[in-house]
Image 1 (tube, helix red, strand yellow):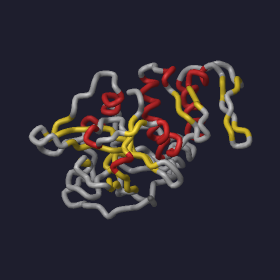
Image 2 (spheres, rainbow, N blue to C red; image 1 turned 120 degrees about the vertical axis):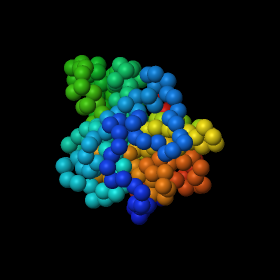
Image 3 (tube, helix red, strand yellow; image 1 turned 120 degrees about the horizontal axis):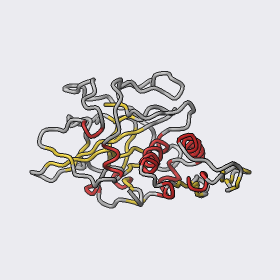
Length: 263
């Protein structure tokens, strides 16, 4: 599936950001948020702050060409290298959740070649050098802890993991109606893309679920909550879509919804 850019339904859509965090983004009338267990990935996603400025910037400080895709911008650093792209943003948020809860032993992602890059080993001084297209695990540095240690680990993950490796790690969700915060729509490969579900709500009268999705893209850019280019529910999306999920810059299939094994 090639990247796409849609014309937007701008009638009735505010260009300003409402709410200071993901969990404060207004709901359509008649809907209510689904309760998330304290300490869960879903609960953590809701508390991510939003920037007052909804402009999406690239890693080098320039503005992204398409400024119509986003509803809001997450207050999460993009870094200064062209690394935190689509799948990287998903891994970044999941790793940040685990880091915030001191779940260091659970922070691990596989490189495209299948090598497991775990943060516990990184803290002990192990690194994952590449030789002839294959990563290895070698003790090369002094033990480290703290934010700088974590950030350097993430840069390595972003360099060697992507949509293909992440799609293989995640578990398939067979019914889109089971959608929950932290789930991921992902198409592995080159080209590939991934967006992460950051909130879910439902209408008590009908049981219909709606959800918010966020993405980074290429080049590396601010993670942002996407508008819905095909519905007045925007920025919310309904699970009552047919075979295709139309997002501003990509079309996903219903069977491309996946989830992390933990969280």
